Length: 318
Image 1 (cartoon, rainbow, N blue to C red):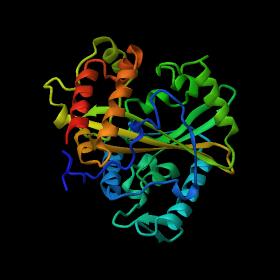
Image 2: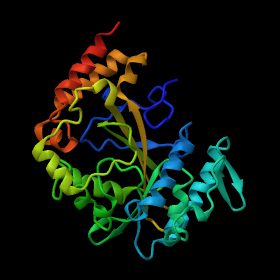
Image 3: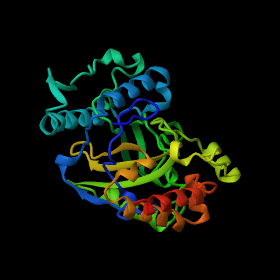
Image 4: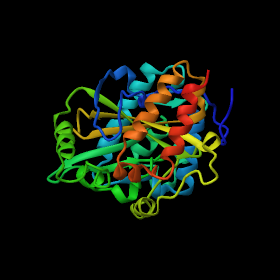
């Protein structure tokens, strides 16, 4: 097997939402069986180690919580402990009243002192997912607590405490007053005993899991439209970043847990996929379908054509 720049194992992509099944800038929620709630793979320990590094170096950038959310955080911990013990016994084992990943002790002293009593921070070191707690008030569903170690071009600090319509304000077509914004709020309100999932995807330069972007940086990127591949080396530096997102309403608090699992694979890895031609064609078609505002939001304006050319060449490879 190959490895990425950070030494992480590379394998065939687990999810390929760019096949047309999950188009960009759509809501695309689908029902989710609870036994498929959390994904665990061979990158569990490296991902947890990276979370631990971020907690040690920049805890204020990767964890937030409002007063009064600890009971809901404990509810998340209890649900995940039960799920991991039942669904992932090969990677997680019982440790007292909790579970721990095999090969990674999740003792509270791994966390900075300010976070050792925060159940959501402890929970985040059990799984590869980021964990966001949404709570309803008169403004709608707001971000009340969260562990976000692997952001996909956004800032947890900037979104903390804001309602959904403000969180999504920079997203083309999803800002306050738009139909998608209203639909998302209604979906959150209507979520009951079931869980749902959706996928989002993008292209980034390099294999960094921690990939934040502030509002100022986003505006600058959309204005100046820099290339992510100034040296033209798409083959070596382009990575597909897939977000698998799930939503689940907590039975006791009635808050909503939003999970985000990042899958990061080199774009060139698609050439090994048995459906590479179809995937490459679909991928290119979706990039070509993005309008200027969407390209600027994704930071793809300068590079879209060369990415399409690369994918087209892959589709023609025998």
